[in-house]
Image (cartoon, rainbow, N blue to C red; front, top):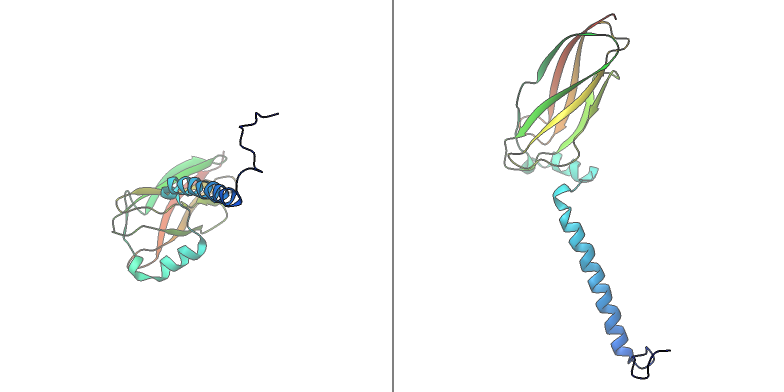
Amino acid sequence: MPPDNYPDSKNIPDSMQKLLIILIAVVSLASCQVRTSQTAGEKQLTEGEKDYLLRDTANYTSIQWIDSTFQDLGNVKEGPEVELSFKFKNTGNKNLIIQNVTASCGCTIVEKPQQPFQPGETGSIKAKFTTEGHVGTNNKSIYVIANTTGTTSQELRFRIVVEKS
């Protein structure tokens, strides 16, 4: 049993109880807001936000493919997956949004960056090509849709010769 001078909720006036509840709610909301702002640099855009940015030409930027938009991967033996990467840099003054990345066939699995790239920031489009069942010369394309001036569609190409193992 608490001592006689210990505050009891029955002895606290209603207005003070309400004030305490409001204070707790405000502190709780503020702590949630702090956590949200700490991850704002990693914000994932919704599909609606990406669609809007692609339609609004005021938000267009420019992209520079650092190495090339074509890679010759040479000759490989049939069997393993081959990984490749196309590096880029946002050379404009707005955030670069990669809305979609697709491959010309199911033998190429692409990885789409989720976060926006700030001006000057670099990134890459990664892909894996399945060599199994693709003996011979393979010329493949990867299509990138982004908020870029001139055209929102970019084509990346690669060539690989798969030899029977």
